[in-house]
Length: 211
Image (cartoon, rainbow, N blue to C red; front, side, top):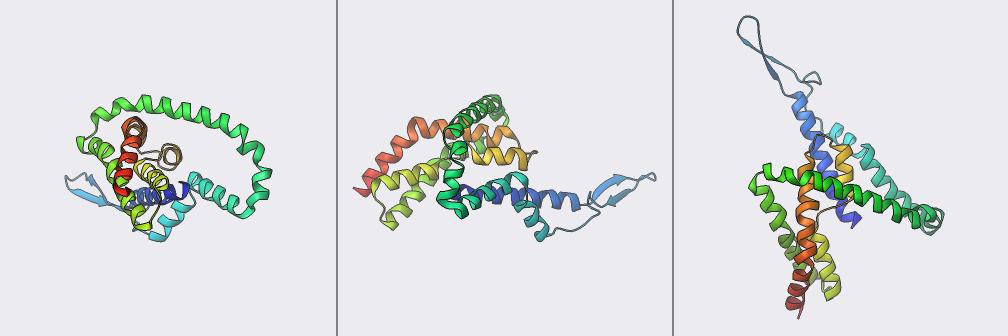
């Protein structure tokens, strides 16, 4: 699941940094004293878009680097690292996760009313994307010959939004992002949809297709 979330996180940070640089490099029109209009460079001296700088900023962002670094440390240290970190990643982690999820729930409640001001197309995406993504996962699972249980799990993961990792990264990496979108849509709309009807529906469809 973490590996499935990483491309989305990286892409979001890349797009945000690219947009920041393009806006900073764009000329700003100001009114001159003589009534004419002057075009001034952006906040970075009119510097053009640089893909290398965008990539550097994206992969060295604090929240993004912490997530990637934690996965790299886990892969490199293996079983010994797991045992060394067990007091932190075991019982203590469950308590920290409970408080974090409570904070995310409060955040979703605060941002849910903001969905009323969003375009209907975004609301439709939050409702229609889960079954569409689940259908794509079903096709891939069928082509790979996965059993029913694995197919259902893959469908549920594909239909879900990121409820923990991505909102936490976006909150710090892209502070200008609208929380009513990335929190309200994922936790306030997509999550209840999958819990109330999605999982049962995906299971029935997978059982019918796989026989």
